[in-house]
Structure formats: C-alpha cells, structure tokens
Length: 288
Image (cartoon, helix red, strand yellow):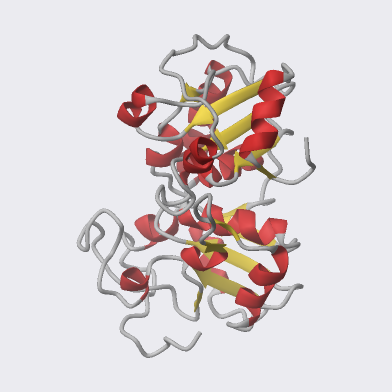
C-alpha cells in the first residue's frame, strides 16, 4: 500500500483481495449506504454530522464520542482505516473529516479513497448491500494536545498575527456574507468571515477527471496557495463551517508538503454564535 494518505480504487480492491487488515468506513447517509456500498464497509455517518465546539467540554465530548465510535467498528491500531464518501466534491469533505478526526486521535493507519465511491464504480468494482457486523475493539488513543486543533481563543489571538495565515475555505456565498452555512443562509446568527482571513474555496484543491473530481497534484496545490500569498513555510490555521471542507483542504495541504497546518474545528458554526467575537462582512477584502 502506498505511503500517502490517498488510496486509489484499484489499490483498495487489491488490498481487500489480499486479505489486508482493513476497516472500510462509509461516511454517507444510511439510505445511500443501504443502496450499495464497498463490500465489507461499515456506515458511520456521525463523522459528518457531529457538530463540535472548541471549549474544553466540547473537545472532551468529541474525543469520547469518536473513541467510542471508532472502537465500536473495530479499530484497534492494527487495522488500516479507509474512509470514503460519494465523490470528492459532493460530500463537503466528509471522508476527509474522518481522516482529520482519526489524525487528531493519533490513529496510526489512515487512508482516504481518492475519488470516493464514484471512482470505485467507474473502475468497475463491485458494490454490496450486505451489512457486516463489526467486532468491537479498544481504540488506541494517542492525542498530542495542540498538534492539529486550535480553539477559538487561539484563533482570536491569531487574527492580528501576520505570521499566521487564517485560511477560509468555505463557498463563496459564505465568504462574502450572503449565507451563514451550507444548511441555509440563516442557519447561524451571523454572516461574514474572520478578520484578516485569506480565502481559497475548497473546490480549488480538486480538478475534474474521467473518474470524477480528484485532488490536484502537490505542485498545483502549492500554486493555488501562492495565488493568495501563502508560501510553503507558512503557518496555516484553517476553518470552514464545521471542519469538513477544511479537512478536505487539510488533506490537500499535507499531501503537498505543508507541515505547519492546524484547524479551528469549531469553525464558523461556533464563532458566529459568540457575539463577542469579531467578524468581517461584505466584499471589501475579496482580493485575498
């Protein structure tokens, strides 16, 4: 199996055929899962739907939730976790959110199916409707505090620090303040963005291919970053609405060699609900 984060459908199919120790995780909704999934895959929709906050209590709750869930589906540290969604641009980065959560918890073996289920089926690989019964395991927690996640106080402190790039990867209607979230324009109480943030819409980390949307090459990702003044040595704090699209960008940046990347996982869903926190509105900073 290749050493990177992304695994192709062919590579995954070979790993399954060779009996490698895998836990394949379908992050789609239960209806889509029931209609057909990768053979042996378990369904864990909470990877996408769970809304986290960055308070100590919120982080503890998220930690406990996913230690339990990942253990329930059989992750002991020996297995490679392989996450997938429908296609890379249609699930708001949900498989990548699973990758980020496992990274935060310190899991040692993580892959994301490149191209998702769409690429799997285009490769002529089979689907199943059989629902496996996972064997629960003790999930091996190895959290390094502050390694990949920051809280809202750290983000607040970073707003006026020019050495830290605050990177907003939400859709354009959210960036300009027309909408507060993908769940509806008034889902959150405030619209706008973090002051002094730069913007790269998450879609820009991907490109169309015959097998569906795929991540751009490391050189292409670095070029996207340079287009808004982000160099390879930058310290980057990512955010979106709830850490899903930002997880997609996090994966792209890590594959492109960016080492100093952390995420404000509470993101706009948390920030917008605290009226004491500053926001920027309108279109005055559209040029990065």
